[in-house]
Length: 112
Length: 112
Image (tube, rainbow over all chains, first blue to last red; front, side, top):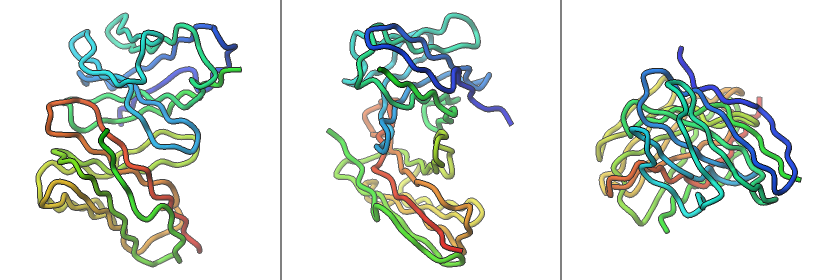
């Protein structure tokens, strides 16, 4: 069964450093998303991406964040200058239409 | 902002018992999704609901999209130990957005 994959599974970084989180969505999906989940809290929407551009973003997705689909398979989230409060699980999701979204296993980011 | 309130926050039940949890909001949603999340993993889609009043089953799981479009419930019949996890509802509003609002989660523990 096709699934969303994410790399790395864990990332530790120093505050102020740039990180890139990678996702490979399900191959025939057209909509891509990033969510985050701070430890013990609910899942929060960051951004949606369709047709090579951002469809919508939340107030969390500020200028420190960017997304890119550099080729036909990868979808990346870049955090330009990480802050302590960026520590969280980051989930990529994809969908055929904008409705049913399938999540990847997540990347656990720890900012020291 | 929009919020989805889930209840109960947590449940301890005996194996074999039925479980019911619900999700409510003051906003109208046009799609409801129910996810299960196990520790350290991404949310796994259980059931998707697209129409008000819709009742959908997936094995021992049954979910309904409320007539008012402001609520949804999930039932699990004859619970088993592997049902342990956190159950999240997620709703998409009628404003044509792609982002899903996640509920606060119901943590389920099943005692063998």
